[in-house]
Amino acid sequence: MGRQRDAGEPAMGATVTAADRELEQRIRTLLSTRAATATICPSDVARATAEDWRPLMEPVRRAARRLVAAGEVDIVQGGRVVDPSTARGPIRIRVHRA
Image 1: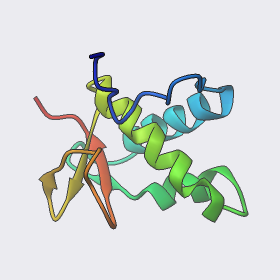
Image 2: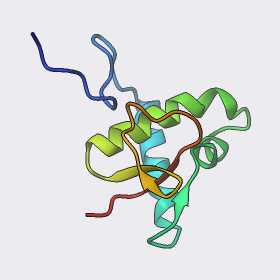
Image 3: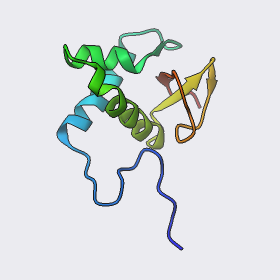
């Protein structure tokens, strides 16, 4: 039996595109402009990327999951770190705290 795919990894055969990497960078950029303890909403990233931002919500969440897997950010709900593969509903993104 093979290794289980991490929530931030692309599905088998899927590739991470330049647009996906741009969303990751936008997350980093927005977080860098906030206080060290601040969080951002995925919609903040989507709105900063396109006028028609709603279709970007899931791609932003995927980008955040990749950054969690890389150890760069945390996904939180109610101020608590949650597993990105099981998080449902509204999430917030913050810089990873060791």
